[in-house]
Image (tube, rainbow, N blue to C red; front, top):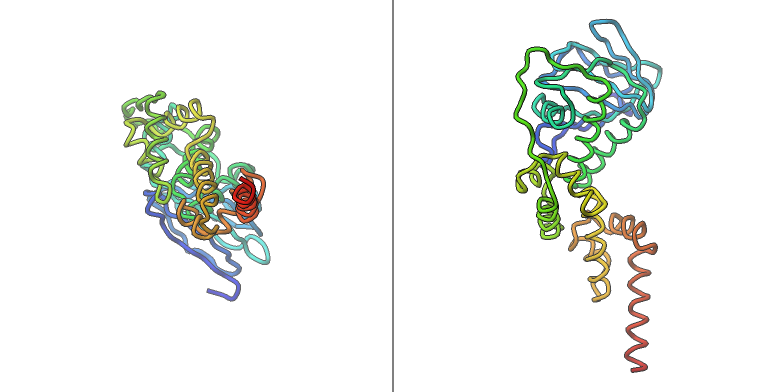
Length: 286
């Protein structure tokens, strides 16, 4: 690659059926090609040019690029300085499963626009990447399905010849409680949303709705709170912040610091020092 260009194309094992690309291109040009699945990209800097059958289009920061399966296209710098973006490549099966749960679309839906002004969707695409990079498949799978559902609801048409799939299973309090117990028992290696849905005998979005009704949060956010609750107990018992982070499933101490501060209001080290001071006073003045 040219100087200043970088790219990572990869797949997280907890996000099956979805490839990920994070890249910064300056002079690189993609040859005309097509994908078996979909392209859902969020431009994060510069301008991307896209060569499509209907003519060229351009996308800048905060815009989302959508390309359907088997649509031949190119990609290139749309302005001096190139472009950077984060891309999801979900398979047909993944998109069809989201469509079946959230829309009346069946089979292989087709996006009806190629470039959208949707900063919210662009942020969610970036959230999928960040969660996968942080080894949080539950958050990655949740964000991926939410953003695909939003894009399908606003910018997709049905495949006219596709048969209707079976209706997805619903979910109630028992499924939500089962999912909560599975998460609480697997803080360091939590299941993905797909695994949770399979283990509770329900569908992705039915489980999300039931879980939020029961606990006020989606599963990945509840998991973060539970990790912080357990971290507080470990810190109070004298375990250091770095070891505590590893014990509850955060990727490192800075990851723990960020979430602990957002929930508790102080960093883990300060929390631990205050608890130790109280314990010392109690021992000193029984």
